[in-house]
Image (cartoon, rainbow, N blue to C red; front, side, top):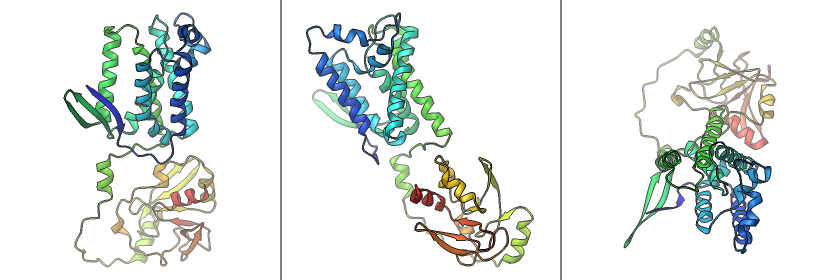
Length: 354
């Protein structure tokens, strides 16, 4: 028997909403289920496929039929929910959780015939989001085969893919009456689609595995110094200007990106960003800047030819001056008001200015 108990993901914020959801479910179970007529109290909040009510659609996800039913759902919510709340934010996670529960209930209504209660549909939505955002996270299991007890770790994509496949087989095979497999399937699909769309829209970023993070922090491999090739920067600046706006650092024409009506020049060599007068303020006012713009990849740091303090304006060739904005150093043109931000400086500014 494999019993999951945790994952290897750390969170940056306290999972307040996730703990609150667990507490509410436990409180309702301990208040209602120990009564002699527990089912009579639960009846109005169950979801009936032939008589759907708002009480049933929203209330069913907070009631459970047995202690094991409650324990299984809350354990899975404890393992997966805190990380999704960390990505979605407290209010966003609450909306997502309730939305997953409602969609799961509608899947049950479309295919089932018996009343349904339990948080498993909403929890399945959380699991669907988890496999998209943390596919290489490790889920920790306690392997129990008396007298053997052993801890094992399995990638989340393996665990959750097999779990979802099992729900499909059980649903279409009707192997266990009384379990709302359709709700599990619907919640999982909802969670996967919502998180996938957020990833595609650059609202959230999938997490690397612990091994990938460790390798990304490994010191750079030593490379012998290469022979310097003398380059006439003045001539190169004039030549590159024919093709576009030259990078003040690499002296290569920068391709531009159109973002909400603003034409931004990005350097694909060093990851820097050139902003004309007014564009900085426009970007900083945008609450949903894509991650790729805030933290562009450094393509080739060895291509930097002009050090800070000697760089020229990409527009009017005036010598740039180093200025400090909220503790972040940028280089500005005193003539045209343009700004040159080295890789990641826009993200630093955004973080400092909120």
